Length: 288
Image 1 (cartoon, rainbow, N blue to C red):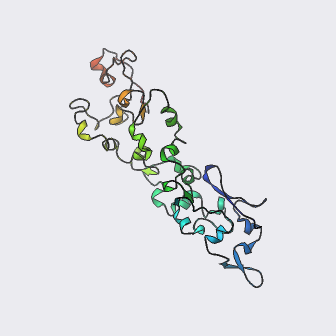
Image 2: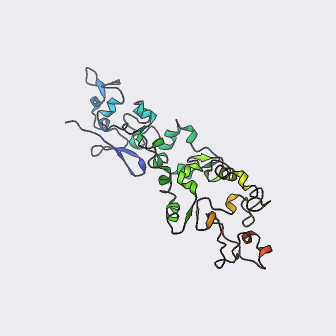
Image 3: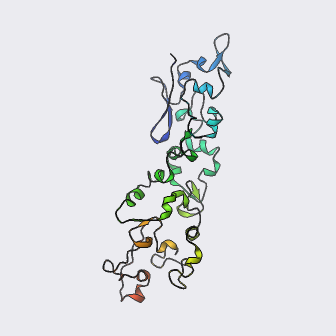
C-alpha cells in the first residue's frame, strides 16, 4: 500500500502537507525521505533525472495528494494543472512549499488586488492575508470565497453581527445586498473602501431628484462642514447612519420628545440656537 500525503487546512487558511514524523513543513515528504522515484524517472545508475517525471502535472501530484479541483469554482492555476506555479517541488522557506509568502505570491497574478490604492483594506496587512477570505485551490462560492461576503465580513467586523441582532434595530436595506454593494473588498480611492464618493453612492439607489428639496427647500446635503462635527464634511450620513440605527429613517441622532433635549425635532440637533433657548443641548457624539 502506498503512503498518501494529504493537504490539510490550518487555522487562517494556510496549507500544510501531512508528513511523516520529523519532516519539516517546508520539505516535500518524498524529498525529505529520499524517495526520489515517487516523482522522478531514475537513470540506469538509480539517480533521479531532474527534468523527467513519472507523470505530468497535475496527475503526478494527485498520485499522492487528494484532488483539489472538484468544487464548482477552481483557481486558474489549479484548473490548468500548474501546481508548481505556486509550490516548490522539493523545499521552501515558506509553509506548504509555497514559492513566496502568500500576499506577494498572489499579487504576482492578481496585481489589481495588491492593495496599492489610496485606501486599503487592513485585512491585506494581516499575516496570510489572502487566504483569510479566499480558498487557494477551489471553492463552492464565486471568487474562491470561503463564505458569502456578508457572512465573511462579520467574522472580523463583529460589531455588525452584534448590533443588527439588537431588538428594535432598523437595518439599511442595502445590507441585504451584501457589503460589496457599497465597499470594495481590497482597496479604493475613497475612505471606508467606498466604491464611490459618499453622496454619489447614496444616489445610486435614492434618486437624486427626490432629494433636491430634502429635507426642506434649499437645505444643503454637502459642500460644507458638518454643522455638529465640523471636522467632518457634511453629507447624507450627517443625518443618517449608513448601516443600522434604532431611530426611524436611520437617523443618526435620537431626537425623540421626552427622551432627549431636542424637543422631538431633528432640526434642533443642528439649529438649537434658533429653535431652543440657550445654552441649548450638548453636542451629540458622532456614532457609527
